Length: 121
Image: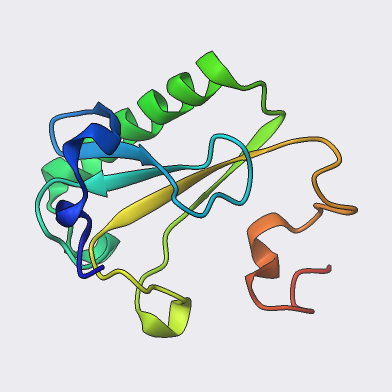
């Protein structure tokens, strides 16, 4: 996929002024949601100030939608910016990943584990 604007609109589960939300096609946990810019922006650093301000609203909406269907114990919020950071679709999207007690043996370090063996402290 070149960008998320190619997705059918019936995949959308919510929207704000600058973003639309979908469930991730390859979820890492139940409720894994993507927050996607309506305007084609490569990554977070290309968002306008208005879009960055609205991102907080979109994250809050995504959380509300997740909690209406699931009962997570926590969340990871993440963005991959650039190929070396793991980005594969070069259209801004933010992952809201619900976390559940017991979904991994030791969650300590959270997003620090994006580089294996570097998360422990």
